[in-house]
Length: 103
Image: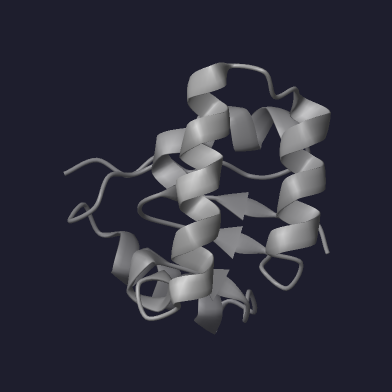
């Protein structure tokens, strides 16, 4: 399932409220750091993602393939670590909406 909403906002800028609002709007598979942190498997995946990002070898196709493989059920992403890669994720999913959160 492709990512439909990428919330570009740092932690503590209303991203949890946005995640809850997205759920109420029908984006029932929304990811936020609060959900991610309780899953050690996903934390290991993000460690690898940060490493690949630092190598600067991934293309938009690589990002999309990784997201489709690692997070197939999520259609909306908010907060960290997603905000660290908002540009890359948006390039991989050009059809996604990208609201910006500011505090």
